Image (cartoon, rainbow, N blue to C red; front, side):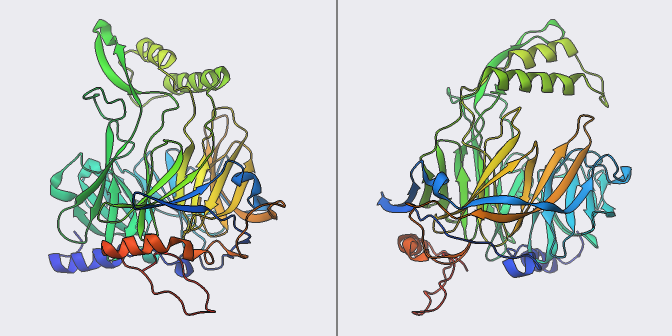
Length: 473
């Protein structure tokens, strides 16, 4: 730990875990102005349901990417010292720099606003400033980066210009309670989860073993607040070295759990339709966002493209020899497939508290779409992007996309989001406004429910004043 006095460390951790403010996090970025499509509201079993019909996406303001690129890092002409292989999480820093973590080499890569590599931090190991198996990376206040490292049973706080500034053991030394970070709540509380961590077996006939969602205070043990379904598993027989064994494996195109902090609530989505549940830190669902959107069927072409890509990765260069390459290839080709794609592939929250839900991206797709939601459930825009890229981070008015060329060389590009057109006639728009702002009154029942469990809320603005975000601290 950085400081020998535990009380000093706890104070530092609490300060670093404060949620990022929109103004401080994205200086120099504009706030997109759109005409939102409001959600219909009803209350069911004490839960406020915010729902849209299947045509809501069509009525939403169309968003696109500006033709110019803000920043490009990596790629075929990039510095080999800043190899982006294995880099999937990106944080946009307040001064325009990019921070990412590459699992190959277990190191941070810091890029300047001009796209040039500035600094690398960390390496593989168990000592201070070293990492073994990082779960993911998120941004906190003051451009602080937070990384849980289950391999070292350690939580780490990192500054791009200083390296690791604080660390602490995970709760109780447990290696199975949580692996990944979802974000920070007011009061320095961190939300962690275990989604994406493969369960080793199927118990009691449950083909979707649950992931844990926990709240970790600045001091004291973590508290589990929910269990949510994760991967869809199937039982398959392996025959490595001629020895048969029955194991659980995720279905290809499986649904999985997503967890993010959205303002003062915890948003979870498990793929049971286009639905997001909003939880308090005490473990109570107070609101649900839903869109009547059908799932895409999995086609023969999708399966074929996915299988061949997995086989190419399997037979490519490896740091270690395969136990049984033929058996591994057989398992890839015979892996069970889901009938439909999940409703979405990823979920992000930008610094201005916009929830971005990315539609499922299938093998062979040459475009992708994402929908921006305001805190009251209104759809503030629908982004469609051409090209074989994957979004890895959203700013207030920009997105970072990841691409990989035929040789497996990875690049990241920062692109600005622009308004392409207004909603078509016949939509149910709210008053013009930014991704934040108007329409907050529809969540009054949510505010009351949050007060009952002690969640912090902001007072209602006086008449004529700009309404605040719902449920902000």
